[in-house]
Image 1 (cartoon, rainbow, N blue to C red):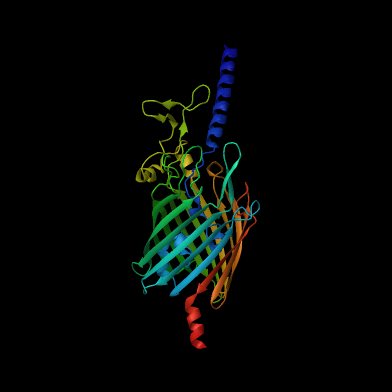
Image 2: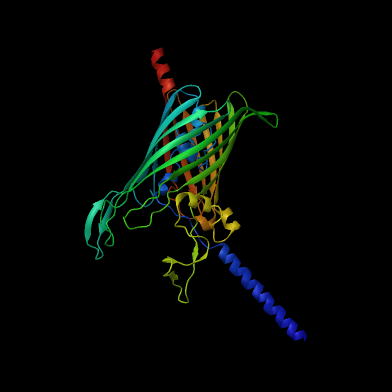
Length: 403
């Protein structure tokens, strides 16, 4: 009897260990969310790029169109513009880059308009047929053009709306596997909110407290062939705060945090047969899903579904939140030092990197530079210096009037 109990205990313990190992393996199963036109999520400017890609609640500037259009209503200057350049995969190829131009104009004390253009060049690609014979050269590229409006609602809160046109030409119309390809086109909107309290006090220290929210790329799906299933674009929810300590007339220090989540369906786990092949249901004409939900749904359904469709349940849903944190120090509003960190779970892309940068503000323009250090897998921006040049038209007008 004792031997039987001992055997049962051993078997039970072994089964528990095996189940625990399977659970851990399942928890670590790679399940990355993919979308069309992911270039829309690349941090375009060097200021936020130096702070771990945190920027939804940072102080307003000419790059607010990307991070949170609602911030433009609180921008101090009457008009400004920014130009940014980011090399991409520079360690492998020399001709892939992201260029970004943005600007704004105050319409009054309570509102402002803005616009931006981002252009992503993917370099030169040689297309070949199934036998490897060349059939043509092409320079794939993508761009997005935005216009936005921001309005104050009281002394501390503002809202904003931006409209975006997206164009993605990756093949130049070349036939791929017998299918005629075309450029992907779409429209999207951004909706943002911004709260600021310039009279805050933290631990007896004068401070400025900001909170921001932005839902970007709410728009149409994109396809590159007439018969392909259309893909979601990267609808993204960004929430964050910034706390700036005004140490004295010359020194300020800011702490920023952003939380991001893609509002698109999570890929399910499909049922497979004994040979490991996906099971196709001839009645529904779809592959059977073992865990999770069908990702081929309308846009609004996909947004709502994105909060409860992860195959791994609630714990996997939590892993879909990315965290960015940044620090920014300004001396005399002329020289800035920045640092940051971005964290993405290993099963959702495994991006983890440190960032650093500096900023220099002169009378008419300011220059920002950032540098990224990858901590896990190689990053397209690893060991790359990015630059942004910002123009202050108010200072330019003042300088001309004095001459």
